[in-house]
Every structure is written in C-alpha cells, then in structure tokens.
Length: 249
Image (cartoon, rainbow, N blue to C red; front, side, top):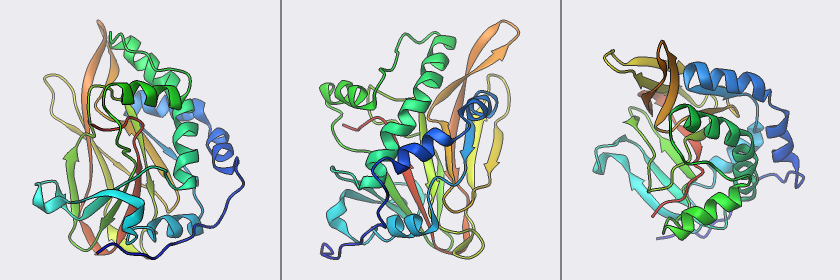
C-alpha cells in the first residue's frame, strides 16, 4: 500500500543548491577525478536537508519503482527510483552538477577516442536520452540496515550514458551507522584490481566514473574499468542519494 504521508524538506532559496555546487573547487575536483576516478565534494547538503531527503523513503508517491537488492543478486538492502517531477533539491542539483562535470566528461571521451560529446545543458542531454527511449528518471534513494551491502556494479541504463555520477551520504557515520564505506575498484589491463575507499561525512558527495576513465600510459591514454559499491553495514541504518545524469529505458 502506498504511503500518503508527505515530508517537507526545509526550503532553500531557488539558486542556493546551484550556488553551493558552483562554490566547489572544481579545479581540484577535476584533478582528483583524473587521478583517482573520484572526487569528494564536501558539505553540499545540510544535516536537515539530508534528514529531509532520507525521510522521503516511505512515501511511495515520490517514486516510480522499488528494488530489493537480494532478489536480484545486487547485495542486501533496497532502493527506490524517483519519479518526475523530482524533489526540488535534486531537480536543482542535477543540472548544476552536470554543468560542472560536462567538460571533464568531454575531455575523457576525447582522450579515450570516443566520438560522443555532451551538450552545454543537462536539459539538452535529457532530450537526447528521451529521443532514444530513455525516459525514466534515474535519481534514486538507497536504504541499508545492519548487514546490508551493495555489490560492485555500474549504473548503465541504455545507449546514452553520461560517464560520471554523484552520490550523497545522507546519514551521519558513527551516529546513524557504522561500516558502510563507499568503495571503488579500478581494473587496469593486465593488472589486478585497485580498491579505493572514499570517506564521507553527512552531506558530502562523491563524484565518480560510471564505467570507464582514461589513464595516461607510456603510449598515450588507455581505458580502465571502474565499479562501485558499499561495504557491509555493521550497525544502524544508512541512506544515500544517487544522482545519475542519463535517464533509463
């Protein structure tokens, strides 16, 4: 049965979320993305905003579908995909983050010999997705309890894929949960996988590669393959907001 409860997120000025995104040191973030395939974006959401977003989870009227990970071999825990229209914070953050990540995405594709280039605005990119039948929104809210985890994976939903995405930690480590670290693995040709554990505080976000990224070698750039997941929750509950820029079929 769908919940009828409505949860109000504390309001922010119409440009506030975009202004916070613009205030990030994107030169440093781009360097981190090039070097590690991920970059921490600190303090993009306040504790009240984190709690407000996490509190949306029981309200099924906000979402288009629910996935129980254990039923599909994805791990343990569950998540829900938002429906359009997106909650205002997500609707503001998605195009603002895209605008900052677009140049990295285009530079990566050029280095990897991929002809695809991403347009100036997120709305134009979504029109490209929708024309190909990718019309379902992909921002999602994830919920984990004790002993839950998310297997290493890639969020690929169709022909059109934006090569970076962003995850926000909505819960407070050490108070709301223990364990549950965000993990990336990188597979380079003829080498074993390299893990990267990304420490996050409540309200922090991590931008990271969805699938491939370029790495400079002695003979030019080559592609490495990345996957991401979440380690086992040792106690408590953890909520995460995932912002994916391409829509799904």
